Amino acid sequence: GESVGLHLPTLSVQEGDNSIINCAYSNSASDYFIWYKQESGKGPQFIIDIRSNMDKRQGQRVTVLLNKTVKHLSLQIAATQPGDSAVYFCAENRGRDDKIIFGKGTRLHILP
Amino acid sequence: KAGVTQTPRYLIKTRGQQVTLSCSPISGHRSVSWYQQTPGQGLQFLFEYFSETQRNKGNFPGRFSGRQFSNSRSEMNVSTLELGDSALYLCASSLDHTNEGKLFFGSGTQLSVL
Image (cartoon, rainbow over all chains, first blue to last red; front, side, top):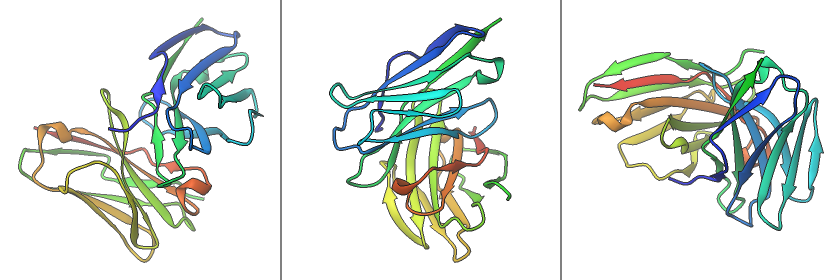
């Protein structure tokens, strides 16, 4: 099936440290990117989005960086907390057919 | 405001049977998308409905079908179930077309095919 790429399936981070989750996408025509968080037993939940005319966007404790030159997207979580334990998905909208395509996800483990 | 509601939460079926899953979007949302989630393939797009019309379709066989009603509620149907259809089926709603906004997901229907 279709999917955006994924750099690392599992990431372990010390509580209080910053987390960086990476994602690669393949379609240079994609113009809208989203990060989702999925906790156990729940559906994905929107975290933050960014359009292709921006290279950085900040939310509460989260920052998304977009590098269109190398087609790379990252999610930075500041001061990681136990409640940040989840699987994180990047997703892209490929514009042409308007589907939102998800990457395979990164599982974030918080170490005490 | 109530979130996206999917029923049933769990389903067990046998090969060859068919199944219908239901999704009630957030009030006022007109777009409903369906995804299949498995450990190996992640989230795979099935289809999107907007104003009772299928707007997009993923790369799934014709055994997978869906529809949307005038109140935006949606159902998806899988006929002639196969073992590989075992997955979490997620429904997501958005205010308008998916490329304009965020998707709000339900908790999914966990389908097990024996």
